[in-house]
Image 1: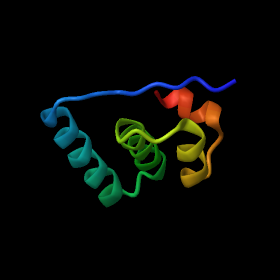
Image 2: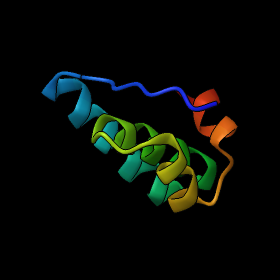
Image 3: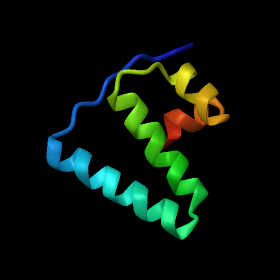
Image 4: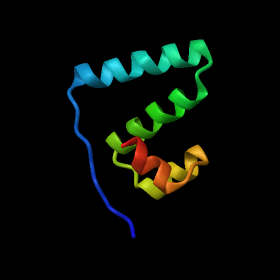
Length: 66
């Protein structure tokens, strides 16, 4: 079963997510990089299954991140 949802955030929150993403890349925190990317993809309107395929994770993991 697939649950569709969409997340809307303010520009300030979006900027904060990107800032944290760049820091995670700099620090080599791959797990956090994937988590933030998952959130950003969902915000962008991608389906959970699509995000899971892009990040090579299970759909359940993406749901857990959300």
